[in-house]
Image (tube, rainbow, N blue to C red; front, side, top):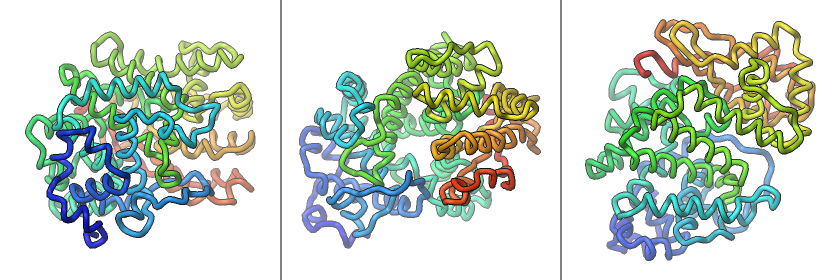
Length: 448
């Protein structure tokens, strides 16, 4: 909706790409000027984000200032706000605005100055010229385009292939290959190649899913192909940090509300795993287990008992601790109580499913959005019911494709239809009457 852009921005002859040549000047602009400038550069992409799906955490009081999407459209759109707050977080990092970055984070979990400085150092080492800065901004803007259902529809209209059941990262990759993301095609060759390589990695490996042990070890198998492509990997990792920084941008656009210290620690662990797997010093299984071990070590400092990754039940619980964002002794004990309350066959099924790496003869299930569902669990009964349902989801390993290694089963519709409402809180056993979501092959032997 270009008609809503400010006259000042419309009359300006400088593009965002040109402004990237002098970052200090670019990021000295007001929020409103920056938002108009980025919209002027990416109108088609940002318009698509108006249709993207999103998940809200519950009731909240929004800031009194206009949101980024309101500045553009005079309306609020969740994914537009999330994306553009990620872009604004880039400015706060560049200018060293630590207090702004953490302004409404809870004091007990706020990002430390040391961690903020680590992010800033990573950024300054990565962004050494205007092209790299513009490539990073492009990556921020296009990252969630796959959440727009029209992108899959446009791909189908162009190619005759239905990709609507794929995850949004895989949809984005397919759309990029089909020329449906024009901002990517306009980049110089090296920048386009680096971003496309990063998007290819993202189609099978999601940083956040590893941080939450939501995916399977086989999903790390694409990391060795990033060896020798440090810039591409760096752009992807930086973009993923900014994605988390903007993740609550639809609720609070004044700070990086979600990039708190525990989340940063999780992503720091993921970074270490990626470095090890890319370098060949860690296998995909050892890299995955490092995430679980560090969660257990963190909880050990909270007086939670010692867990051994070699023990199948312990390892299964360690995965659940990551999926459920368990960071306190009280919550760890709740999960252990729920685990013991499961019927023996259910517990055995869930333990076995949670220990599958993903291979042709024995595919693993990736229960996408289960962390979002688990965070809405309030008591023991609800957790037991949820774990029973998770056992059903994760043991559904059948796939028509014999080369399937990882099968994705998204519980997003279950979350939206049943769990977000009052019905689940009143009767969590409702999950016993919910069908297992359809599976989509997320990884095959050809991808390994």
